[in-house]
Image (cartoon, rainbow, N blue to C red; front, side, top):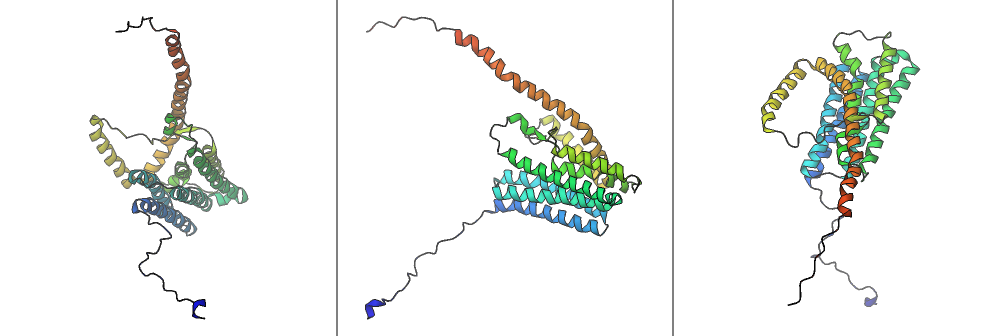
Length: 291
């Protein structure tokens, strides 16, 4: 009977297999920045409900700065991941879609009642569609290199910051109330259209990889001046930057079309240059006599 139930003693020296591999910190660091931006977006919604609009706008602005940093930090540390890309999209929707829409509705769109809520919904949904299209275009292997300098439509962070222009003006003393609510709604709808449109806007992703030596000191001085202006006159600087950005869109479209024409004419020029060489025959030569 003892053979029916033989004793079993596990080997204590056998190492246990790990179910999950350890994740390096260089992959975690960019996601921490993204989560911080997400917390700021949710906090902006809370502050808007408490009618503390200035801190809410500042949260959206800081979230936009962090959104520009997390991707660059991931590429610098070589910590890009599919998880980080999906988390970044979800954070962008909260920070630049839901939060600005709710802030604008609580600020002045509620004067339009149901129509104002529709405008806030349109802005939020437009940001979601913009982010979804951006994720799909990342997987396009046939995208030309020069198109990396342009976004298709206004990017979500820029759309959120430009949509808050009525708040910047109100903080500067401009009266924005029930009478101006229709104009604010028209402006917000225009921003929503720009985000989902195919109008190219300059991205500046490849700008600054190589800086001429003569430009180093002027860039330092300009950076200090810009930071000083933002700290001393925050909403004046934001309003001016918004107007300058909107005015620069036609120049970005012209630059995009110029690159597009140059790219379209390059294959035909290459074929024209290669045609005469294809017709040329090598000079006839007699084989050397055998030794």
